[in-house]
Image 1 (tube, rainbow, N blue to C red):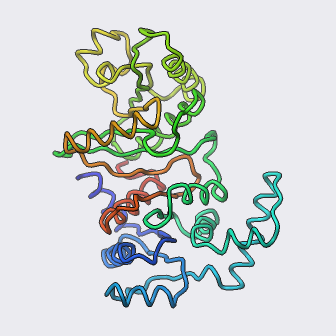
Image 2 (image 1 turned 45 degrees about the horizontal axis):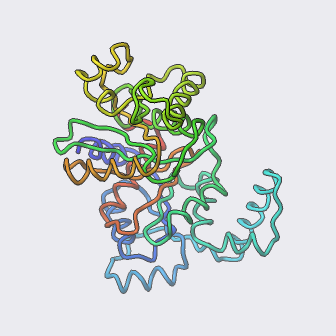
Image 3 (image 1 turned 30 degrees about the vertical axis):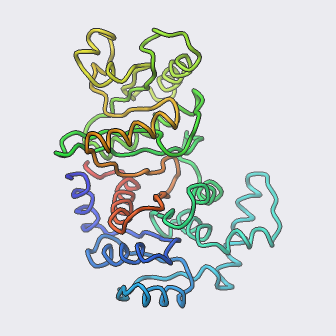
Amino acid sequence: MDILQSCMDACREQPGTVVFPDCLDSRVLQAASIIKQEGLAEPVLVQSPFAVRAKMSRSEVAAAGFTVVDHTSPTLLEKNTEAYRSILREKGKEISGDDARRAMNCPLGAAAMMVRRGEVEVGVAGNLSSTAAVLRAGLSLIPRKAGIDHISSFFLMVSPDGRRRYLFADCAVVPEPSSEVLADIAISSAQMARGLLAEEPRVALLSFSTKGSSNHPRAAAVRAAVGKIRERAPDIMVDGELQFDAAAVPGVAALKVPGSILEGKANVFIFPSLEAGNIAYKMVQRLADYTALGPFLQGFNGGWHDLSRGCSAKDIVKVAVVGLCLQRGNLLN
């Protein structure tokens, strides 16, 4: 996979920092060891040093000079607690000291705070924590990117020969996006695609309808989202609503939408619902043998990514290094 290799090469040239809050897991320790040994990044483990040492011993992972941050140390816990209360006050919310302390006495919260402060570039979790918990930590602490109100996700889909690369969004976060949320998803995905695909994003908003062939409210919502994207980000090459074949097959596009700016050559596919996106990426992965990298979270003004709880150590390495390149925005530029 040329994208993954390019990302690993970029990380070796400029190693970054990745924080792992779910680090009492042999898979994370193995991944951190690989990342450290191959010079890809500096792994940071958020947990009690004694617990990390005990887990390493049981997992037979050799100590590799990892940086370990004890989130329960009184000085750091008090600092994070006060910072968290201040963040919430800025949002017009109040929280008791005890509640704030409980939130920060958690590896996820402490790690997200490190991302917010710029002490690390990327946080990777979810191998032990639920997706909901990972999202809550990010949403409560990490600001959104300018102009983006909603967090979403994408998968990078790579063909078996590595020549075809697509972004599928949203496949993991937003169940039933409104027109405004679909616009956020599309704009975020286009930004990510610029750094990943080495070509201009060609964004298709998908539906069971093509250009008004159905007057169903769900198709109308997709049409409305396209209008919002063109108003907010006129530089993005976007079209919709389109059926998949009209978005991805030039011959079909010529028949169904002869005036489409995409010409049946979309490389970023925005699905109208979470169920559609999740089903689609798994079908392409399982039936067409595409590699599915992700899901990567997008919309945060800082790297914060979720893992499947069934992930392998190699999966964790991939998410960490691609997450670093996404954060820098220059993977193939």
